[in-house]
Image (cartoon, rainbow, N blue to C red; front, side, top):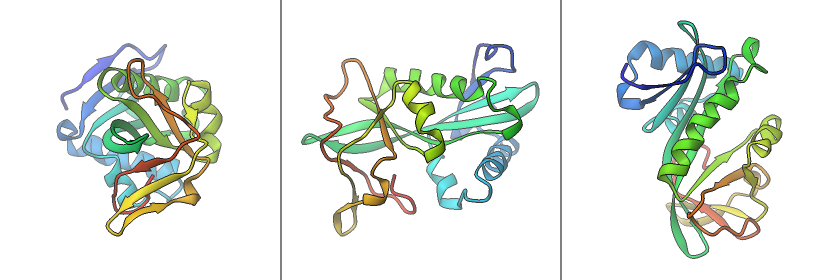
Length: 190
């Protein structure tokens, strides 16, 4: 596996950033297994597919994978512009390692990439993680959210109140009460 190691993670094994193309089969399988455990069986094959094709942040405790998050590129429409978004997927830390800074280290490494390469960051959060993202400076999107589908733009009311954005200095001007539209994909749209 070829990747970039980021620090020691504040006393734990550190974070490795690696593109999907450079994940060896055993690490890919370990990451999928970890997310299956974290999401208690609610991690579908489509959810896992959404986490592939970009940069993975992997949290290690020695040789053991204890956390995962990934960043993939998506297009979001807002204010009459198509924006290049770094979209966060598959964030999870093993339950016996939570509260030790792994999640913050994972997100910190991906936020650095967002700030250096994208117009904004975006993600859809579980209810349990709303406070975690807010504390990191992610803004809850207050306006309507929609998706471009094969049959046109469709409102996704079920995703209202869970989409967050990370503004980027010099990036897109955002009106968090306006409409935000994501590109099409199979499965969960946000």
